[in-house]
Image (tube, rainbow, N blue to C red; front, side, top):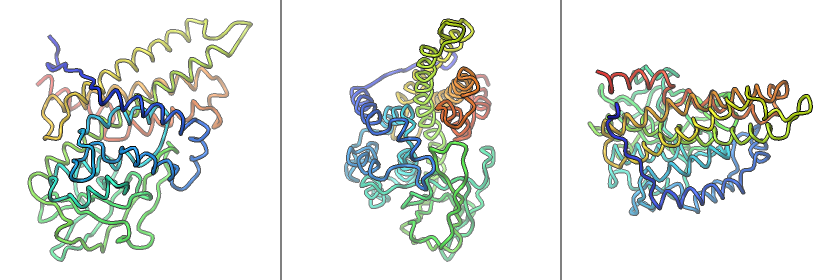
Length: 375
């Protein structure tokens, strides 16, 4: 009998189709040379490429048809994100998807229909969630007063410089609420970009002080609390999917090098000291994919249940450590060259460090898994 109880693992025709299309798209549109070309740019991604992704319907995969979406559910976003992770493609898709899910779960289709329609049409969105980088901190420092004006700021807002819509987690009358803010409402200089270890990603600190929020742009009630809980779990699952794709790409990079680099007249891939860790990465990537699609099999548009929470946390904990190990081995196997900026191994170890901090690291999730599984 499994300690986790539910071992459901399914892979629908829609997911298989999206994975094939996404892999082909990312392979053609995001070769490693293109990824490197975007590292030093302000946006970190190609706007034309984002428009092509929107045209494919990816921004609205999980949204209802009434909002211009495909009504396929959040689980179908997982294979697209995995393919993006494999290509190291940095775009606002994950941030936009999570912002849409938060609105949909907190406000329902009718209350947030206009904003969700904008998102499905390609308006990049993001969630302004953290007051500081500590995932154990439940404090909400950003407030909305009786006059409907925001006070406070948020740290590490993903894709803030690209976002046209911000879903800001605020406190109103002692309870959590969601304020929808448009980019043009922000004051000049309100967005202060961060310097991240993973240069394929972008985030910023955002000051929302003084921004007025209309009543129809403020979501309140008990559903907000449940939606925020689901957001953290869905964020962990999508980050795990992306990290698993990146780990698979890292493995490809390792294998290619082991098959071409020679020392003492022999291919270094023939040495057991390099073979065994490479096989460990392969099995970990395969296991990670199982964890991710187990999670995708359990998440629905309804509030996430205990089994779904367990699955999302397990996927994130495993993916975090797999990519971290793969990135470290990639650097070490490339020798002195692996420590240089020009070596692609650097992209993966940097992505590993970034992924670890998104929506809780392995220790964060295992601490909560212990309570769920062992108490």
